Amino acid sequence: MTFLLSVLTGCQQSPANDSQTQGSSQVEGNSQEEPSGVEREKIVVALAQNTNVSSYEENHLTNLLEEELNVDLEFYYLPADNSDARTKFATMVNGGGELPDVVVGLGYAALEVADYGSKGIFLSLNDYLEDENLATNFLQLPEEERQYLLENIRSADGNIYALPKYNVEDWNTTPYRFWINKVWLDKLGEAMPATTEECQRGRARFLNEDPNGKGWKDEIPITGCTGGWGTNSFYFIMNAFEYCSGEDLTLSEDGSTVIAPFTTDAYRDGLEYMYELCQQGLLAPTAFTQDTSQLTALLSNDPQLVGCVAAGGYGYWSDSEKNPNFQEMELLPPLTGPEGKAYAAFSPANPTWEFMILKDCKNPELAFRLGDLFYREDIAITNRYGEENVDWSRDPEVTKNYKGVYEEVSGIPCSYAILNDIWSKPQNKHWYDVGPSYRGLEFSRGIDERKPEDENAVNYYALTRAMSAEYYADAHPEHILGRLRYTQEEGEEIAEIMANVQTFVKESNAAFVTGNKPLSEWDNYLDELKNMGLNRWIEIAQTAYERMSE
Image (cartoon, rainbow, N blue to C red; front, side, top):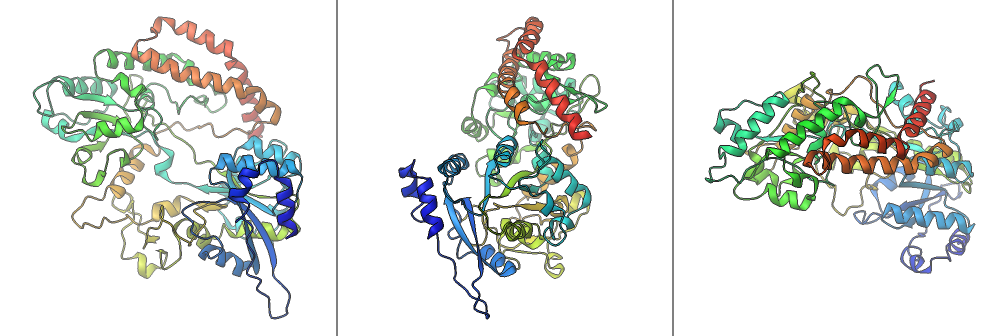
């Protein structure tokens, strides 16, 4: 009761929110006692309440954690939206009342974590992470991966204030997939285009030779949309000219220097190529204006209108596994540009700051052991897939009856079978993957193929992931610029510069390609970037990169 009263006192600034989240948030523990009569210690966990978790108290994962550590877990619920949850937590901190023991999730960024750490709100975990008696499971992670995690969550002051979540999957690192209408290709006697020249010539045939058989030019050779996952066709095409992944900085070919790819001559060549596509009616200008709902409607139009489209997954086709339009599509490997480049935009799997121990925690070592337990393999999988041997299994006697998702392409057998998919459904088996975790490529490549209920249906889940891994996973430069670790001062200095530059580049990309801004203004574009402070951003990024490389 002392804890609840102190939190309520600290949150009096927002009574409306209190009535929604505070009234039901502090739940009594199980009050279980050991045979000795000593009450189990309690750990108060603050997290954003997910509506798909029907109960955190009567929850399979909660029970596992409590039994393993001999503790009682109590939950302090923050708003479901992470942004609102962070605001609520900040109000609690500013109110001065007693804080929970740990806060889990909430989507904190690097500078936010560093700021709370520097003020003593989040405790430094450096010593705990080196203690074999406390970091029992974390220290068993693969050495190379563990060092990668530590370097990517370490704040510029040298401290680590959070335990990370790190779940890597080939599919998620290469979102800018490109799909082409294989039925149209076959009808026209065309092979899969391999170069930008072949793509331009072949898409002209899509436009002019009526492959959908309707007798008039209604075909859209290339499209995409803004705002969706992997739906911007610009990045797929540009990577045949200059490697880029959004409007971010990259590295030089030798990996020594931070550069802005959107200022190079090769990038300008890519813009010129796409301008030609747009002028010829091959690249739809609406690709830069329509949203995901408009794209989804277009992709399901009867008759089929789309020849090529950028889409991170097949979910952009309504009821894709039964959608005849989607069944005409096939993934296209990266195109080779005039200088021999054939890249795919790559988004390295970065760890997130997931589990922070707070200054009022009475037993931080016990709290750390709770966070460390999430790295044990069965706990990491349970927190995503549910109860072992009920919802998933790693038993070889079970997995031998399943085919691995990459088995046909790479020969990797199934080692983890999903028996009952409970994701996106109300359940009390896990915390909806909130919490520290490590699920590496060995896991994601060993999961089963998710066989369709219809024995005769094409397994698009397995097929598209296998093809994507084959085409895109390694199609990037040797040196990739990962997430940089800025100091608080550096972050504050470049925040506005980054926002302005990235917005300007994105808008200019669309304007150059559609012809609303002629490429003769390229030098003016470069000057404008300098005026926005691009050179300063690059300079600070180079400093941060070298600091992390030491």
